[in-house]
Length: 298
Image 1 (tube, rainbow, N blue to C red):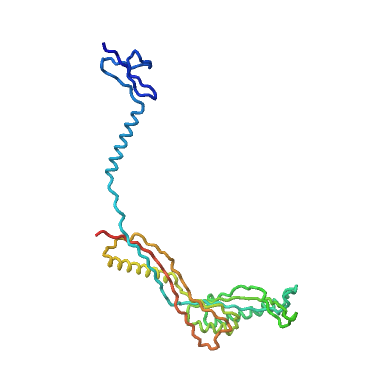
Image 2 (image 1 turned 90 degrees about the horizontal axis):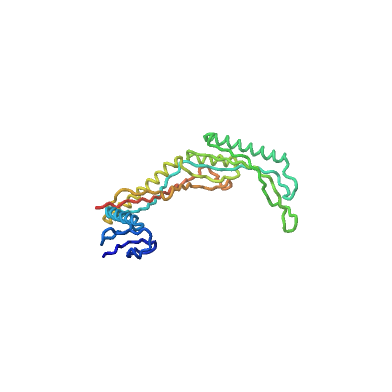
């Protein structure tokens, strides 16, 4: 006689099959037909089926993706160009000053108001005479910039000695006014320098040469740097036997540098003759670029 079997599912244990008479588990599943078994569902079986299906789909999608292509080759070229141009304008900077009478440096009192007023009157008279002289040379009024008044002490060594080895230190009050001239015609420079000398300027701080249109010159320097890079890339491609493709990247590695010329002079070193020559020289403008080309497939 066949004994009915029962299938038990125990938490944390494997599935056991025992005779029904020895089964202690509640609610056993009894086979209705001799020789057949019915096993309870395992917890988490649905999750394993979902994971297996997902892995199958992922493998299929990966297999369908095209193989990655190698990055195209590129040619990188850097080029630099220095453009030299002749300046077409100039700027002159000069100063006039007047000083009060000298006094002891350790004196408690400052320069008297009368002395300051006299020094300022002399200074303003000289500045007015200078401006009128420059306008007589044909310089437009808007090309003359007369700066504001500045006041500072000016120390001098007196010939009178307070002690055996120490001369008395004295001080004056110096009143100064600067003047800046802008010249659009360089041919007028010698005549203006003569006018400054005749007016008795106390200092000529410098003559700076420049360009009226800096943008046009810097654009030209940049364009020539690009042309230089293009010529270098063509030469390299011809020698290497490769074909240049499209431009991948263009970078201005250095902004155009503008280097104006400066000439320094002092009033004491001014030439006595009016036929002095002044040569502005050349102004250098530098530009630099880096360009990347793709190498075309043959």
